[in-house]
Image (cartoon, rainbow, N blue to C red; front, side, top):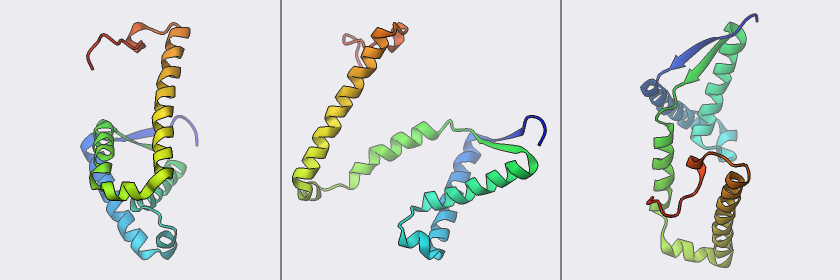
Amino acid sequence: MEGAPEVFVIEDFAAVTVGLLVYIIGVNLTARVRVLRDFNIPEPVSGGLLVALITMIIFSVWNVEIAFDLASRDYFLVLFFSTIGLNARLADLAKGGRPLALLLGLTIGFIFIQNVVGQLGVYLFDLPGRYRCSLDRPL
């Protein structure tokens, strides 16, 4: 392989469409391959591994890099993570008992520590003001 690879960019709408197709392929693949079912491999992962293998082969054989425009990614990530808890029931959370309460406490504690360490880094390394925490500014 000589020279820089040719880059083939899949635009935003097409990338979302390809993502949906990869999911459908993953559903079918997981349903048909017993090992994937036995080890509870999620459908997006099995479909994604297949697509990663295909893109690796395309890159290796034809020196073409396939790039996906990820403009919608952040929106879908927020949508996904904000809907995770919609199916949770308080009764199920109560069954978690003390271990779940401990996990919740540790999570909240580490979120606080992460933010403090981040702000200390901003001040210690004198990063630009836009990175600084402003308590008088509305969220």
